Length: 248
Length: 389
Ligand SMILES: Cc1cc2nc3c(=O)[nH]c(=O)nc-3n(C[C@H](O)[C@H](O)[C@H](O)COP(=O)(O)OP(=O)(O)OC[C@H]3O[C@@H](n4cnc5c(N)ncnc54)[C@H](O)[C@@H]3O)c2cc1C
Image (cartoon, rainbow over all chains, first blue to last red; front, side, top):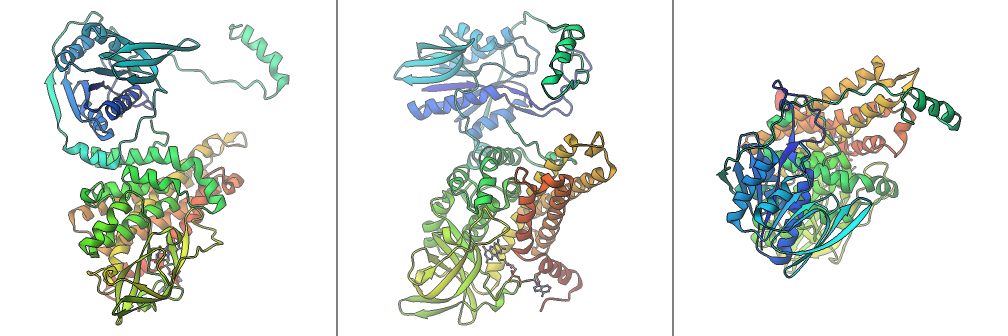
């Protein structure tokens, strides 16, 4: 089975993001990057499928050279190969998905895994778009994945509950937290990753349909107020919520 | 996703390679997920968390600088140091286990053992199926191991050992003991297997320190071991001292871990504890404590990093290891005590890791060469005059 996990290199969740000088991108100074947390579930799911079916696991990342760091983490976790689709341009999700699908079409994977979203821009579009361009069925926000022969059963997270869906390989699946417990990169894996090459290809250009005009931070929160610490404070709290905050 | 963000005032991380950072992060996460949730319970009960052994082995934490053909990660010494640092942020006892297994058991078998001994023991020790211990200290010979009285006598059937070792980490748990004994007046290393007739390893009790680590006596009474269990390349006290040098190197890094845990706890506590209507971190005396802690941690980090780079280049001298062990453990202990003060009464509770680290570091300051002995080693190096004999 050929399994591809598509992974992204995103600012660390602890990063205090600053808007860059152009007003459209973040200021990269002092930002640590990491493997997108949802993509860790995708990598783990890929490794598990390989344990079950054999074959090979490939980590794919589209972006600048810096994404190699994240690819090396996937190699350290145990994927067999890494592929950087090199791209320094600014793209929207449509253009990004087209460029990824273009590479995947040639690779003919049996299973393409994504995280349900990147925690940088929150578009949540790429997995579905890629599935569409490949003509593969798409399962999004999976919290459980069971494969038997050619069939795949997934639990999806839906509002207030779970939905069970069935499909077959080849398939595109996007992973939600809870799908599995991603393994740590072992020390042996980290050392072995050094010797595994990262293949590079140039990303194909596709036009973007959406242009970012500007980004801004939400207004800073004003200081909180402690009204009291026991039940006697409730009337005052209700009054403030009604009269000052005007939320009830 | 990491919970502990590290302490790095001088961007020391920028001096690490990508692999070194990954190794550190793996162990950091492991400690958050598997060590911290259980360690206080074990510390209270005075038990070693044996479940961790398999998990640590799976991640490659044992003998991690040794060759891949024995199932080891073959990392450099800086990465190894970072493993020790992170483990000790969890607990000095857990780090001690890994230190002993790696530096005091696998290293000597690799360095002084026969090919058969290496093939027989190293893969099992790397995979955590086998546990080892290192017996040098005796009841009457601690800082002066050259005076040891444990003796080996050669007989047609093998070597017969008589004597006793004390304070031996992992002793009761160990499948194999690396035992140092005099044969015709010269110190040699012997591999003694668990269950050998005439060998017992009772656990020592009553410790106020390193409670989550097993410490034992090793007793040899006409204990006969096969001829092939002598480590052929050992000849004199230099061999065990070389082992200790490996372990001390890891301890120098480990102490930074304890110190970081204490500083991190003190900093966040001081920010949220209100007295006189203000966080205690707004008082100058508290700030000074925190600043001293952070400064000492930063110095210790740089000391270790350069020591590790020298070790990787092959230029490190043992006296330089003494300086890092001596300094880092002493400052870690001072930091733990200062953190305890910052936490006030809460500092003595096991809801916080501070008192545990503080108590642990009392052992760490003594074992692997006491603070005083390291002073004398460096003193001899710079003056040319040995002050300890
Ligand atoms: C928890 C724990 C685990 C241990 N694990 C192991 C292990 O796995 N294997 C092992 O072999 N050993 C182990 N040890 C033993 C440890 O290495 C010894 O305790 C240490 O070497 C000191 O020996 P001692 O306790 O006999 O102290 P002593 O040598 O009696 O020293 C007592 C005091 O006198 C000072 N002193 C001694 N000689 C001089 C001198 N010439 N000049 C100035 N001051 C001096 C010392 O610095 C110290 O302050 C462990 C110890 C502990 C506490």
